[in-house]
Image 1 (spheres, rainbow, N blue to C red):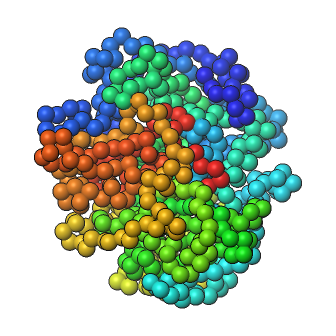
Image 2 (tube, rainbow, N blue to C red):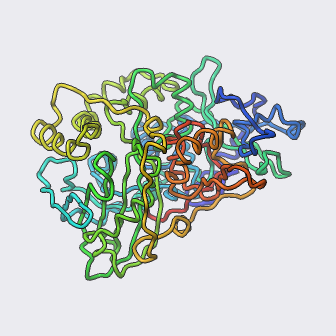
Image 3 (cartoon, helix red, strand yellow):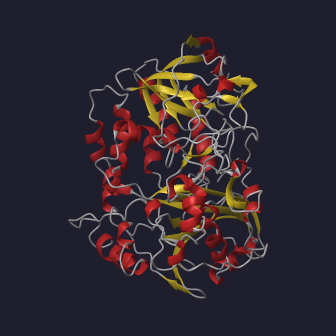
Length: 578
């Protein structure tokens, strides 16, 4: 059942161990909204079984719904830094104690690292704890930070900001990495330790025991047509049962959302807040290349009340490469704002353009980022997720509170919410300078976030439309040519994995009130409003094949009508060292 790859050398063992289980229970209905698969007024958009249940669809009558199952000690969802590090540490401990511990990791990307995107500056403390000999093992940390630059940008000028020791943007001792390459290396280390890694299999469902505890996961079904009907090649996904199930899906994981609801994990914390990060990799003129240089900026082109900033990192990998990106907080209020087009406009600032002029863009991608921090108790949520499956004597919560992770999280807890003031960016910078640099985050209060990002948009009639310059094809580019550089691809004949709880909501609410913000906050051109075939009115068109799996739509949709679910395994971007 598993593809042949260097991450599945133990696949045959798994297949031999497969056993058939009855799985005639239907997947749990996740939504309370009225499902609408067709309407005389609203064109049909959503055909996914989570919205249009198969037990109500006559086309599914008589289809074999039996699933295979396999048993493991630990199942991990997600082959990013968190999931792979957890797998490695578990096998290290088991091997030290000479215990046989079966650890299986599933990853929706076609290969480890293909869906990984980050800046990234890596602080090596955790890596040192995981592998003290990481240099000897060949970890791809090739670029130690040699120079830190921080800027406040106006439309035409740059105001330098001193990088004092101890400020959160000081990167002394860190490394500039291409996180996809680093994750691929982690996968190799995990496999050497005996972790079974299965790329190309998307975890689609959390399985529960009768007592409500987590039983494991099920991978997604394949061979379903775009209209939701079974193809001749239809196959059920498989179940992976485990004593412990760890969820490391990354930001705004769709299984994590199921767990939040199942165990009411958001009850005693603030709403999570997010940002979207857009990134490009460029090959620049070697005369402008300064390996190890790290540049960050805030200010233009965003106004003072829109949280965000940029980075530009000079890599040292044998050729003059730079990684650059732009981050916009998803609590912005103007529905006309386009994070992608702000990114493209930023590259025309004189301080940025001088590095890029004469260079070539070779990669593009985007991903949502967690911004919540201590206030939303991310570690508490993780701990509670484990509690659904872990029956252990150690106190994970106390250990986390004693760790350097907790100390760091607590010390920076007020930096992000400090930007919610009349002066916006400038007030936040002053607060950070005084209370973080001087007091190291020891102020006796904790600021709050503004609320759900989806609730922050103002009606379009209250906002000013933003006129963006046309891309010049040299520094700035259009959206579709950018998505092409991400290598994104999905099987075309499958139900769109961007599902709508109600197909009528986009036009009736999002377009009518907010002028269709999903056409602007999506960094991949997935959503567009087009005229109805009758010529009267508009409809939402979802170009699911463009999706780069950033999750921004699920987060920012003002109606909270979009629910991102996994497509068939291996679909999505094909990043190479992003």
